Length: 498
Ligand SMILES: C[S@@+](CC[C@H](N)C(=O)[O-])C[C@H]1O[C@@H](n2cnc3c(N)ncnc32)[C@H](O)[C@@H]1O
Image 1 (cartoon, rainbow, N blue to C red):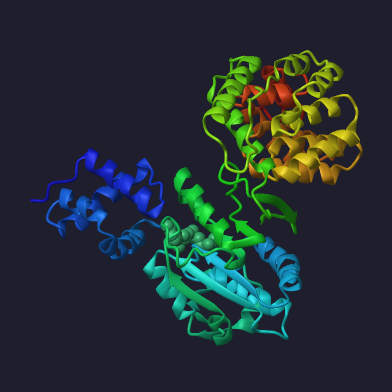
Image 2 (image 1 turned 135 degrees about the vertical axis):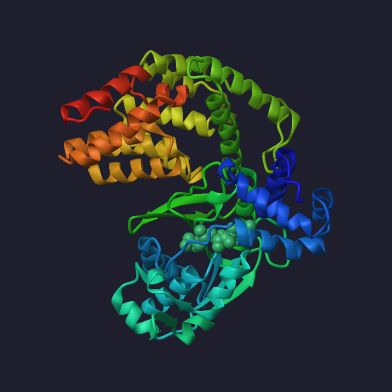
């Protein structure tokens, strides 16, 4: 009789999977984990002996792919999120070729059964038909079954569901119900087994690639493992190189080494040249933001800021951040007075307090954001925009700057610019309520009631849990309840109750 693994064993197994494969397996898959642990540990004689083997590197090399075979989601298809391939071939590839003067080196990380890297090879050939050796694609995945399928280059019609007929006709031949990929396209991609969750210095070498596609992989990772995987990707990506993530994934909270870019209706990232002082300042501001959101909705913002500022000064005093100039004496950042003015809608006075802050804090991300908000409310739109752009140059993933830019753009009549910045803020932080509210109001003004109701009802929902500091900073003087009521009133007026 086999003894089922107990809850503690399953929890330990889940932790090992997180560490070694990066995967966050949720509670719904408890039975699958139990079954897998039972079959895998049976070969070692006991669960304890099986767990002990995880310390053996050589054994892990063969065990992890077997676990990945059962635990990974390998759903993919050719030209998935077509807009990203359009951005790649119309903009990214020509830029890389112009900059390097030679071929473009691409990594498809988490390539599954090959549809993504092969789509890149086809897109390159379509864009530059005269040069078939233009791209050199490395495709890596942990799942051996998916890699085996990729090597065959043989697909069902379902894998080509988003592929235009002209591309199908040109790059595939049919064999019964299968589509067989052109041999030249297949030769353009080198498949290799690899694990994004583990260090491997021979693979993750600096500046090996100009472009990385890592789509719909990190969404299955634990936050810490996702951060480490992005660190590896950043290492192999040349400075100024391009990174594409899946539509539901963002780098926010994972890395400060990138700028957000937008073209052809899609978002992607560009690696910054170096880790700058601004990046370090933003890391401190991230600490501030996290502290603020960890507190309850009823905590006063001033209190939040005071505690977070204290924590930041402790951090900078106790541990030197690499790259930050050495300080003889840390001057704590105190935004209390400026924030009190924002709370009381005295924006001119807030700006005077900001101007009086110690010079070393003048370019802190949170100071710049407060300044941009105060300037925009004072009607100094051009200056507000310029502060936002300065902030985005330092932290391309700053959602607050994107939102303030959206408000400024709208004020000068540039609705499409406003929508673009709101969408960037929503993409970077799907929990940010204000850009949704703004998008809803813009849509209503444009007469698009379907989009207006969708955005406003989403905003009403998000506002209930919105960070108090963001309600204060971006709420335009309205309290949380008033903003929710505003969303509901607009939806009511369009005949929908939310
Ligand atoms: C949903 S597919 C994405 C395929 C393709 N990138 C796309 O967007 O269509 C996710 C792939 O990531 C792979 N994967 C998951 N964890 C991995 C890891 N630790 N190392 C390498 N690949 C991994 C899975 O095996 C799977 O093939």
